[in-house]
Length: 458
Image 1 (spheres, rainbow, N blue to C red):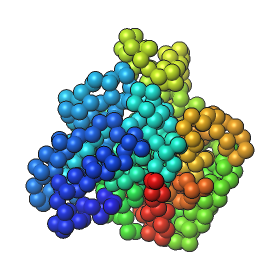
Image 2: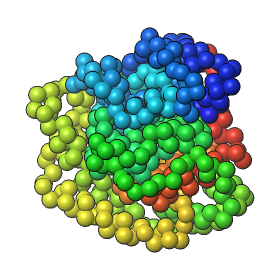
Image 3: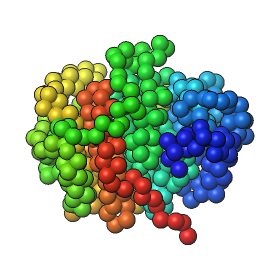
Image 4: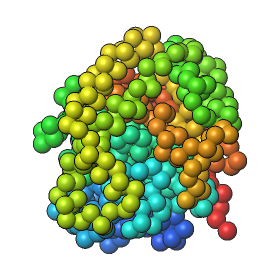
């Protein structure tokens, strides 16, 4: 059941919050051994919290959710899927968790992630790989892989992830669910272990755009205790969902369909999705934006030293406890010269100026979310349209431009290739999440890709 449907059923009295939470816990106990989506399950705590909910409650009353294990939940471990924090217990809720509770949601557990949210496969050594419910021999993407797997596998109807350079969008695409990276600063990061303060944001994953809108409206908004949040007004997402796409101008980023390595079957699924948006009344046209390629280097120049600085105390005392891939990236951040971050920030500002005219012409930009479907666990390099590429390098062109610019981007299911999901990325102006999710909702009302579920397990 979706977030919206479950919340509505609870409001009608068709089931109680306790029954909804109990059902989720039973699904987790039965199915999660195959997926390894959860690091910590809050069974007794979640049931007690469900029992304590009084009517009428908020818009998410009684809805069970999971949160990525870099987000603090008071009294529960926040491990970041690392040996470094294996015994770390949070003393307070992250702002987003406090807001979920205020909306009536019940956190049933903490979800697997790539170590310290810095990787795109969720195959960390300390807690084992999260497995894709569409094929448990394949990755979920990352770093919010446990969040994608938990929703796709029907363990919870909605989850929170974090996105620094694609970590909500990638698992949404590979797991066949809907996810949105909000504009940087729309959602508070207080109580979240950082990767890069410049780019980090919390975002929801769920089955539909409607579900993501409900979750985002519940967690977004300024936080007086978090200087990274913006005070600029942002339109709520739920009220505008029914507006449709009639007259919306959608620019298709040409080089992401034609100028970089891409599985042609993925490209064909995305092209068909764009044609459907056109049939629904959107004005869809190709746009050349080669300058977006510079986002890849600009983001890395800022992200690497910021991550190294955040980890410096642990790097001095716990270096051997990091997985080799994350350790190598952190050490690379330490070795960059002081000028790297300054250069990256200047490049980011220049890129934003170059991108501004795009959003004078278009309401949304569109592209494939990923160039391939989910590879097998341990498969690296990967085949991308006949080219062998390192997995992480294959996905960077499709994700870095939007996170580097801090723009809201949703990944929505739009097809299957070899029985595995394909995602369409829709990007809007800063703080225009309502427009992004309105277009996603219109597409989902006209198609059923978001309703497709993984095949039943044997």
